[in-house]
Length: 353
Image (cartoon, rainbow, N blue to C red):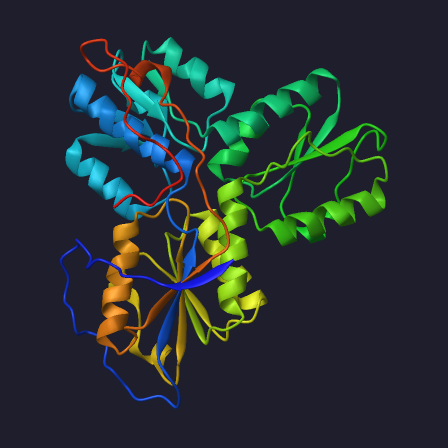
């Protein structure tokens, strides 16, 4: 665990600088920059998949739902020719469609096949792992308590693998009321982007009611979600204000705000862009913590740092709690270039700008 000064490049996004005022505070102004932050391996893979599909097949390429939950990423891909749709019946027959990083149910896969769509599955491999667990436990006639948020695309996809066996548990409180048919044959799984602490509280309360509750064979909450939460816990202890860069529909970004407040930050806010930072948030603030969700490109963080520097927060120290080097292969349809050569474009849990 390190706390290291870093030299950071200026942002690439044009914007009005000098919008925030450098107001005096009692102590020294500084920024604690959480690491890891931003893009994870699954997001990186999904975004590259859309970019490469556009290069390979030409525009338009259709994407079911948002490829990842970030408004900037979606807008950038739209500018390159991606068309985002809610359901496959909006896609012309025979067209190329990319399934988002959050995964889809077998019903969606079948609907795409029925329309003759050429599907590229960009589901995060860690989400696919949870899908396989659901299939396996359903085959063994277990009742599956899926800890997650009703309506989230990942939960819909996982539940769709075994709809007759899955009950969604939205919160620790729901653990106290959920009904099962056989308390001796029940297992829990989880959405990959949840708060680790809240999830384990839900599991604890479930186990109080169902002592024979089985655990998944491995942790369902993804490494990136956990790492970003660990980093912001460390930062929040010393922060008067935490700014989380991420979109409102990004579960892991929203959780980072909650975790920051729980672990000591006096205030915490989520923004899509630096322009959303309010001057009053900085009143009396000496230390600002900054992080970003797992679907956020680093350029958006750099824009935040540039605006904060203009308000006197030019002293930036990175608080690093983990190294990430996981890499995922592209979907099989995109692993070769147009000439049939293997494409070695790097993927992984790094911050792409």
